[in-house]
Image (cartoon, rainbow, N blue to C red; front, side):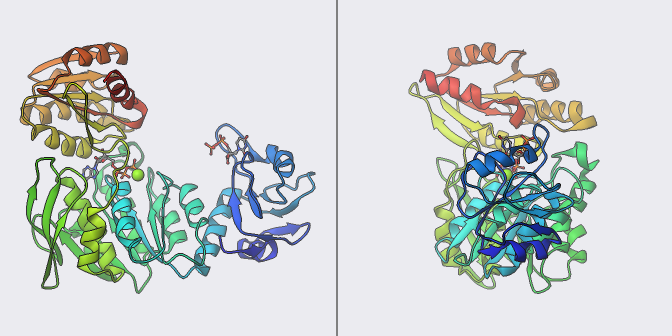
Length: 448
Ligand code: ATP
Ligand code: UDP
Ligand code: MG
């Protein structure tokens, strides 16, 4: 955070300052952190009310806190009605003082991947701060903005949502100069109702875009025609299948399934070699490239950055065991579209191809149908075997025509896979975060 006095902050957030006016340069929310010149924001969570930790804050050397009720602990306090909202307001205050240009990224699939790709491009151009891990919600996004200071030239901010209004809130704090919706898919349907609800909620990112900002639109998405007429700002439309301002043409995959393509924009063309496997990453690359172009980066620098983008743990990482068996680790998360993308990658391998699926969460009434569709997609892809583990995945199992087994216990599944892992086999492992399918990958790797 750019250094500020407590009175400046208190005024910006409509609070009441009690105690000494100090200079602070960090905001933190966990009393266990030791934080020099820090301002502790006491949040109430599902497990704890951090107001109970103010003595601990003082013991650790903390001198200032934002609270909802005045505490007897002798530290400076800014008293507010709601500390969660105050966190957002402090972030917005910091944002308003930053010179950095901001790109905000949302979508159902690939936000973190696009964020890493864009950060990889921008960090060759100027000092860049990007969302760490998956800090993309109403708490994570403000905390991200609070990590930034006057040295930064670019901010790359991932915004996630599982209910309407969330992106409106986080994007209003981010005040992006560039905004992109990577795609819309049936993720978090429980909170949104239907796909149109997802599209509407993601669309909030464009309404919060700065008036002189640029909207990046995925022209291949079914909802492009819904968003485009509602966007008042300049637009860059991208496509890997049809028309647009920014195109990926002549796409080819190398033997490791890493795509190459011509990136075409305004009469210029640049060959791009991606560091990440899978054709869906062309879409992600276009999304990142669109943001970078809007921020003034050349096609050449975009190509360099995209070729250097790092792997993100659990997102389509392709590993090889000592016995030659290939493991596709896509265990980070799952919904139907990311499942389809991953199955396409598995299907492109020769030899025996085994799909290992754990439950996809937060689908509400669509749970059964979505899991049945996995079985159908696996049929179309002509996979050799489908092993399912969990509750809802029994519906994937029941729809799959090939060889299959349903497990209620991960250890049994792991035992089966260990017997089958050999040089002629490729195993794709995927499920929602809550399914913890990474444990299956870990067990196979540990044995290798
Ligand atoms: P989260 O909502 O959990 O933050 P995210 O939107 O940040 O997810 P990533 O973490 O980048 O997305 O990827 C999540 C999953 O989606 C991975 O399994 C990845 O392989 C897959 N995926 C990434 N990009 C796409 C895409 N463009 N289309 C379909 N699936 C994708
Ligand atoms: N917290 C804290 N000290 C502790 C435990 C929790 O300051 O020893 C904070 C924590 O960082 C969070 C708040 O208390 O800001 C609420 O914690 P909870 O676990 O309920 O929610 P979450 O961390 O999931 O937001
Ligand atoms: Mg993410």
